[in-house]
Image (cartoon, rainbow, N blue to C red; front, side, top):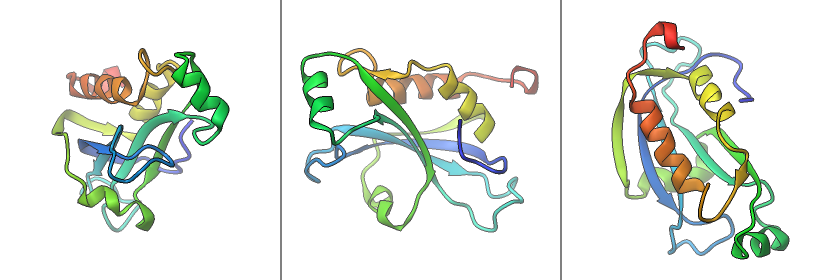
Length: 149
């Protein structure tokens, strides 16, 4: 599911409120997860690069999607997992809601497995970016052994 060509190891995460896609910058209603890479265990990249993980409507800027969400209907969702790039630099300057370390390091494969177990449709009240972020927080805080991966 994730477009990762090598395994990345993450040791901590930060939940960050950010503006909605296409929304005003002063209204951070969306939440994304900023994942910190463990540069000591990743031999595939030279520098540690933070990754962003979030859950958004698949057609976030479509007016039909907005109408469906406001009428409390589910819409197809999209899980985004991507390295932090220059245009996302706002993410590093935003205040964080919650910072935590994982009980054991997570790999990109672990995150892919988690995403595969999640509901694919986004619903404004039942299954949204906030519920996804807190499910991820609960899941990533559980104690896991190598056998459970």
